[in-house]
Length: 125
Image (cartoon, rainbow, N blue to C red):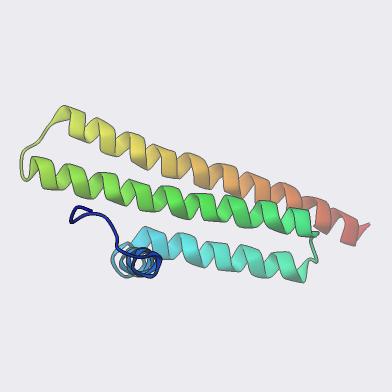
């Protein structure tokens, strides 16, 4: 076993929880997305969406958070590798990663609006 392999499942979970804590503490956009996820899930409960609809909303919100974390990883790695040097490929990689976050957030918002829209329409009818 090399120095990068975890010795136990418990340690692996602790490393993962530490990663979540670091993302929460250091990434402003992660905190924003987490807040939005909390708000959308609160509305889901208030609108009494079905279990399947709630699962879809939960999945799409989680996907945005995961993509945001991966975007942060890409930015950290690029910044560490290129230090203070400007590189066109580094900028392209960071822009594409940021685009992935934007795309996932927009699709998540559309999914949520579609589900909530149908619920609100049913309530108003």
